[in-house]
Amino acid sequence: MPDLRRGVLFGVAAYTMWGLFPLYWPLLKPSGAVEILAHRMVWSLVAVAAVLAVRRHWSWFRELARRPGKLGLLSLAAIVITVNWGTYIYAVNTGHVVESALGYFISPLVNVLFGVVLLRERLRPLQWAAVGFGALAVLVLTVDYGRPPWIALTLGMSFGAYGLVKKRANVAATESLAVETLVLLLPALGYLLFLQGTGAATFGTEGVWHAVLLASAGLVTAVPLICFGAAAISVPLSTIGLLQYIAPILQFACGVLIVQEVMPPSRWIGFAIVWVALAVFTYDSLRAARAAARLRRSAALAGEPAGGPAGGAAGDQPLRSTT
Image 1 (cartoon, rainbow, N blue to C red):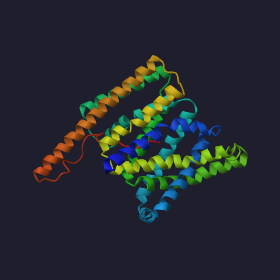
Image 2 (cartoon, one colour):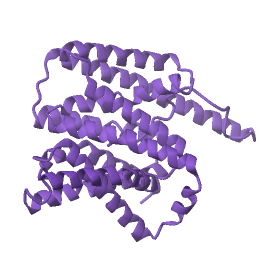
Image 3 (tube, rainbow, N blue to C red):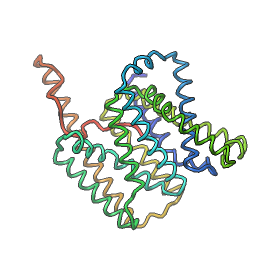
Image 4 (tube, rainbow, N blue to C red):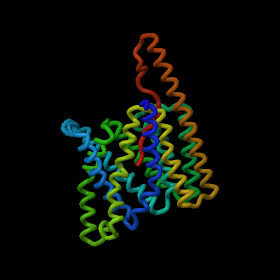
């Protein structure tokens, strides 16, 4: 199978699994969100360590240990993803699946805002239009919910921050997850031991099947990430940027069709504005990618360096993974 087609299939598999997460986390009840999060941290490290052991791939750790800057960034990423994972599990298990989907719908727009505020990048007019539509959607949904959609905003902001930190760290996905979960191991284990000591733990007290499901959180975390890593190697970022919408679309469908959350007309209007914003954003990103490709081809034909001018507007290469 050609590399591109195989990469697209891996990408579709990764985002489909992420999109179906709302069907998995409720299976772990009566465990609370924090207990599930702690188990996810511990068992993810076990799963990633098993993958690295099969690959006999440990040399990277010695090199990374000599790079305190990268270790610091990955530690920060661990904290940010803890906020993201915990918020998402809480949202799904308390009946806020649709609002959690909103968080991942708006994450590309959050990335653009981070580019402007933190990296001082300049936006193209259509990017400004997309951000404006996104802000309008949040306002409409704030009126609809009677409060700011804090779950969606927390997920969008934390995921955007996580992507930004990971981009700066520039460490491969599996290795990065290994370090992040290692950083989280002690507090996660400490919390689980506290639950066991107080008799509040559900692991081992709710039957074998429940214990297996809690332990499977490691595989549920690692498998889609590995699939995504395989896709990222061979699939253009513009294609990854389109594939990323699979996850929130499936999450939204789970919330509306399976969980059957209430969707008043005002909420549909808010989501429709978000989708308009994403359509504008995607159109502009694809147009910019095609223009950059034409520029590289022209430069190659003229015998000039293919890299083109440095810099560029925010959002040209949207990020690409989810919880």
